Image (cartoon, rainbow, N blue to C red; front, side, top):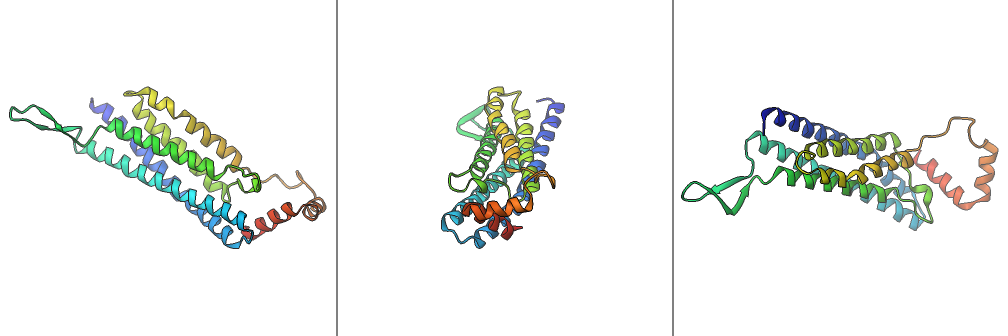
Length: 225
């Protein structure tokens, strides 16, 4: 591979690692908020839902962490010049029965994209509305999660940019993950309407008195605010 291609590839990997580091950091506030909410929730089923959400944040964080290690491995092997290093036979030719040392970077990057796509799918389950508690399917820390969703998209873009020259079909396969992350950011990170744009204080109070589910949601919101 020409030297200029090496430099461009390393930039892709560096960008992906930087984005994923920010994603991992951003998960912390959301997980902390969910754990705190579960601890203050008395309704058993509601508590189970919130606990499941926090556990899936942990799973997504683990996938992101693993992806960073894999990207660092790819970059380290390239820097050291270890690219599918084969053993040699008695005549100095490549000896394939022992496989290769270092592996194929394209295959390793495909695995990274697969892990990031699974992380996106896991976050999709975190914020999938349930029939009984649809109001729970929102980010508790929308600012942090907007950063996480956009960071995952940026990391996918960077890794897929490296893959395009070798296997463009792989990059195309994961556009659905990028689309999912965009939808999640729009739906789970909704901003609070401006004052005066929604219900009056009397209307809110009436709604709480009229609907026990609204009352429980309001109590939960106050408990985590």
